[in-house]
Image (cartoon, rainbow, N blue to C red):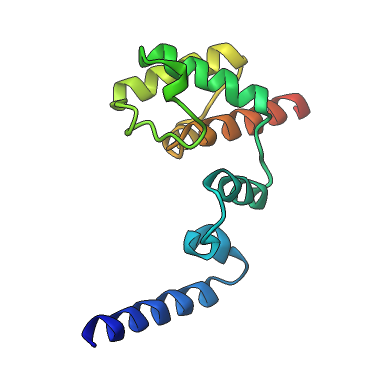
Length: 135
């Protein structure tokens, strides 16, 4: 009985947080997408921010990350978090530098700090490339 009450309480709390989030609720409440594949959830979140990396950009980022971390490319995917791949802070700096060199862009420190996954890196590259092209 206690667990049922707890579950109802937790569900009510999540529902209240989601409703309070307004139009940004989908990005801050991934539980809404129960049953939706992870890759689709990522695409929804990225589309909401207006930047979705091209598949070829994601493939290049995967190759660079795999090379920098000396791991097989098939172990790296768009949803992979750098920490889960064994990257420490120095590895992440080296990955950002390699991405800047490969794509001929400059990634600001604030942007680099926001990169948690391979998909985040690819999206940031697309955003930086678009900004460079329009400048």
